[in-house]
Image (cartoon, rainbow, N blue to C red; front, side):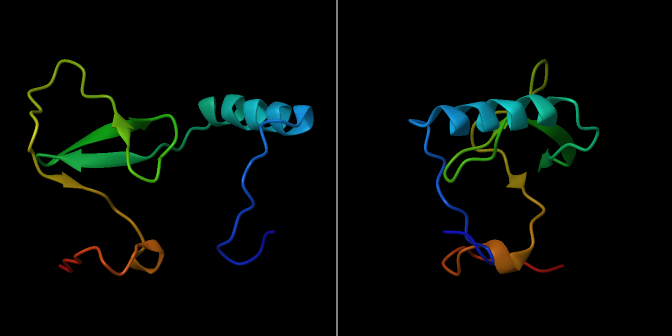
Amino acid sequence: MSGYNVKAEDDLFRFVDKLRFIKNDIKNLFKKEALYVKINDENYKVLGRVGAYHIVADITDTDVKIGDKVILEVNPKFVDSSIRREYR
């Protein structure tokens, strides 16, 4: 099923879907545009995919600690209504 803001789940049991998934991951490695998160007013590159409950960012050799404030730039239309919004 696909449509407006709806995506069918990847069926990794089918060989063709596995190949498509791998091809898209390799293609994304060479893209020039990247996603960033802001932690303590500094931008850090997002590594890999953005998950439903997690994001991995490269904070190598920085002073980032657990509990530091993280800001994600997103379109509010795509964020669940239970998430607190702060407009500036």
